Length: 146
Figure 1 (cartoon, helix red, strand yellow):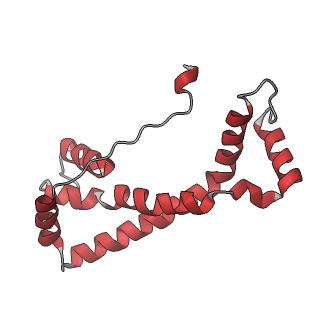
Figure 2 (spheres, one colour):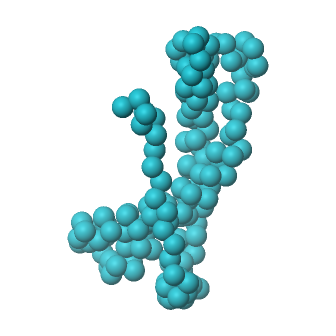
């Protein structure tokens, strides 16, 4: 278990260029496509806000993992780690690397959340109340693979 502790997996898929043109051509220039762009942007903003709330804990966690590699742990627990970082480097040190994390969230998460609705429409969704679960699942899986 220790080898795989705190690891996350990311799947990536590449859509063939021809399919991309067909999909984009189908929705380009419509009111729905404008809503999708707005939804995608808002998803990115929400993801960055969530990341900014959790980033200090991620910073402490990463430093605890790195400090545990030697014989003596520098940060024995989360609370002590936060105290030591703030005392030695200042409170803003908890946000080191936030710009890279924000860029990742704006690109990755905005697409993942923003493409869910367009993928449902591609699968033939007409009414959200009567859409079968398999279409919702497939749309979520497709958006997650991007």
